[in-house]
Image (cartoon, rainbow, N blue to C red; front, side, top):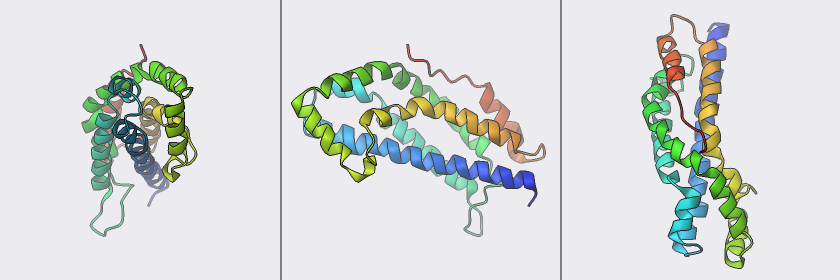
Length: 190
């Protein structure tokens, strides 16, 4: 395998692995924080929506994206073939769904402020402390998880820039990567 394809393989693998980690962290938001908070009625439904917004929608989108990435790197041998995977084409298929990030990102300053205020209340602070002890949280604050979707779209852009640099002109994915860049991701927090 040529040096450029080795580097491309590494970037493709990084895209898949970081997507796995990202989906895992979205699942922490839903399964460790949001759903138990709702079930135990720690705060009102309005506050839950103000903090978590459409996080479940984002989780579903990214689970589907991860599955599509797995399919793209799958090889007949059973071993992943990162060098020949068309990940730009896969991400391009999901770009229309990334609009869902806009609403989530817009509410983040407010969501973080709500969490800070709620941490001063006894019921919420006890629940919050118990959640942080969950091994899935890895000692991280809920607010650290909540900011991850805001950071994900720029991360895709950085990874795709690297992928574009490492993709030979004769690779089938070469034409798709610039198209992904031409799509404007509205992630501004208004």
